Structures are given as structure tokens and as C-alpha cells.
Length: 332
Image 1 (cartoon, rainbow, N blue to C red):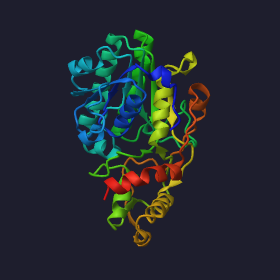
Image 2: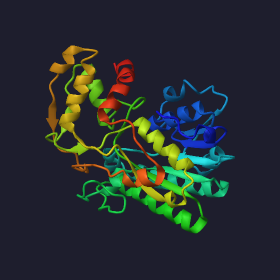
Image 3: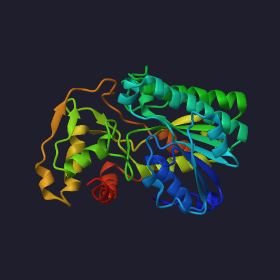
Image 4: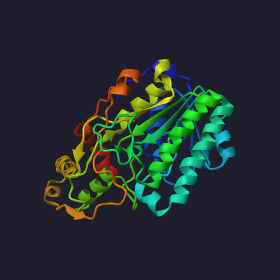
């Protein structure tokens, strides 16, 4: 990834919540590479120690084992920090449907705790992971930030409530915030295991093991798949932007192209046959459509480009190629 304002990052003090997770650990690593001081808050509910093992002993890195549902844990981790990159959450639409109470406790209660701690510490900026699920039943394509529909899952409700709370904390307490509506992020360190695994690592693991991945529905549903380095770029630019018009709003974080699930399987097969040619013969299975799934997702990134200078480098195929060595090594 192209370096972003390295001189500005040197010595910056950043709390990454959910820092042992997929996105959080990649953010921690990038910040440490640019000589920032990094606090990581995680309770390892979905994050993994292995994600931070390569930099856990870095002199600029401090791990706080704690839960965002505990205000004191939030305050302890945020002490002396300049910025917050809030990634901690319970993701997954199906998980929220199965257990809406815990999803709400973490994603709403925990988010409010972090906002409160950030307000009290007077941080310079609070950048948080929002979600494309906020668009709900809106059929408009591409998705534009100021037009949303009704939420289709408890998870989507919690992420929309995050946006409302962030807006109120700016208006009432003058806390600068930026929300990032992630669209189907993928890449190194993404967990392929469990019932709520994201589609790309789950499918890759199936292919590597010569097992048929199961597509929910006929495969015509489409997504705007977004490589992890694009997400890092947008987080750092949001954290450092000096454009006052860019603050206290939300942005789509995506590449701006959509791919059907059938197309995705073919791209994954093609990339994996470099390592094992027999993967090309693995069949694709189909199951029922999943409750709460949005049929199509495609982001407009015009707002992020114009106000924050977001210029994503990795489309789906380039991101898959960049990820494949890690996938092959870790998902076998």
C-alpha cells in the first residue's frame, strides 16, 4: 500500500479497539510500521492472539485485554491517546439474528462506552467501523451515503445506531467523528472458521480442502468486495484529514465494483489453481437464501474520494492475488 502521511503518523498515539481482529490487527501493524504508538483493546471474543503475535513485543505496542462493555476497560485503554480507530464489534447478520441481545450489548452499549471515554479523554478524532448493512432494504445502486432504507437485521440496526450516537456526540460534546461503512472486506488474517465466517476465506478454505462451497441462493447476489489495504488507507486518511468538511459524517469504504457470488467462485478457483490444479474441478453447491441478506451491494465512493482523498488501489482480483499466499499458508 502507498504510504500515507508517514511524518504525521510518527509518534501519533492511537487506540485500536478490536485490535486482535482481522481489520484491527492490520491497522495496528500498519501504524507500528509508521512509528505510531499503538494501544490495542480486545477481549478475544472474535479476535485471535495469533493476529498480533508478530508485533506483540514491539516497544510502541501495548495490549489491553478488556471488554468495551466495561467503561473502565475503555478508559484504561484510551488514556493518553490522540486518536481512536474503533473496530470492536460483534459482526455477522446471522449471528445477530440468532442472538440479538448480545449483538446489541456489544455494538451499541460498547460503542457508547467508547464514545464516552473518547469524550472524557478529549481525543482529536474518533473513527469507527460502520457497515454497508445500514442501507437495508434500499434498492438504489450504487449506494450513496445520504440515502438508506430500513434495516434488515439486528446487526444493521446496531450499526445505524452507532452513526446516530456519533452524530449526537459531535453536536453535544464537540467530539469529531468519522464513520466508515465497510463493504465486504477481505484479506490476510480474516478468520475462515466458524458459522459466521466471511464468504471469501470460507470459500477459499473449502476449495483448498477439495470441498464444495455452498452459495446461499442461486449465486446472482452481488457484493462490492473490498481489500484490506483499501480499508487501511481510508482509516488513516480519515484519522489525519485536515479538511473540516470531511468530519462528522459517514463514508462508503469499497472499491466501487460489484461481483456476483458465482463470479467470485470462478475468480477464487482461478487464483487457487496456481497452487493446486485439481481445485478447478471442485463443484459448487447451492443452498437456501439467507434471512436478512441484501440481494445486491455496490458503493459509490465519490464522497470519500472528493472529501478525504480515498483512492483504492486494489480491485477484487488484485486483492485476491495479494492475499493468496497468506490464504494458502494459513487456511490449509
